[in-house]
Image (cartoon, rainbow over all chains, first blue to last red; front, side):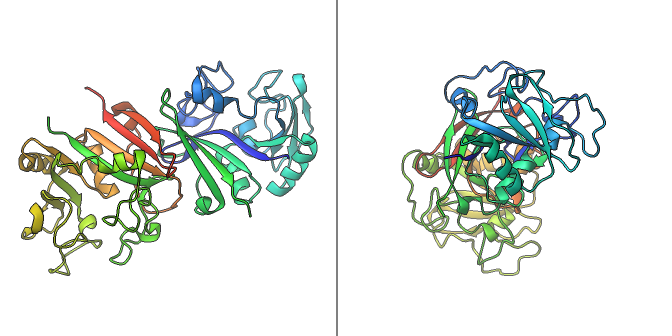
Length: 213
Length: 213
């Protein structure tokens, strides 16, 4: 059955999934790469260096089981408003790692962008429910991933459309940024949670699984 | 060697060590007992029900190794300002579980209160450094515990006087309350951290150990 997944969402001890300000030079703001060192040597999309439980959690959803991705506008391009660089095609080079349709949520829809390797970026002005419906259709029975950022994930969890959410608690404190948890005070009544700590990296992998309703 | 310890400090995923408002009826505010269910059946000081790694972490510092305790005013009595109930002797009954001198930090010092079983409450208007110095003297070579609440712990960590801090991340979201992490953005550069997840309760035990300077 097609599920809606969040995977590898890394947050600080105080709940921030990115620092600020987000720019082309520093997509995670003052957090730099610190949220993702449990998985990548350099930067997200760089060499994967983790082993053991970190590598296992890092692989989830990247094994061909995901058939479509949904991401927030600022994961694709860090600034709000009208598109100011029509040549921008994301951070991921000519052959992005998704290899599926990717739905970028934006109030400024534009033409789709076809990349190498099966990735096509579509630009969609839609509610979480509408976006999931569209992505499920595109995924043709495979899973749908909500790729972030934190405020996009929060919005989809609030809307009740997320089945499984993997959150990585990294033992750093950011103090400011995009909070994952804002408005999710009922998370423990809606999800079961499993916690696994990584002896290698010191992070904790939390898996939230939606309770049967 | 006498160390300064924080033990069993339970916080939510968004970093709050207590809810609000704190009152005599609900000392942890809207958090109720949810932060402490990994350890206590009923309420802090009630029957301990945990097993395995939770029970082990729950016992740390309660084995006679702590010789003096420091706590914030609101851990002793939930309201600020002048003492309005001179008969109040804390939450813990005639024979509190400390069995040592306990230094309650307050801007309104008053006479010490001698309890059964070796506990004496002293009331101290002091900086973290001064309080630790006074408590170490009283502990006579044993460890000193910073007993909370979260803002008191934060203040002592900021002051650089804490050697080991055990934090329990409980998979709930509180949204508001007393944050442990405010102003501790440098925690990962000052402490090493070990994470252990509890399969029974789903909490994560984080042990912060001050780096050798």
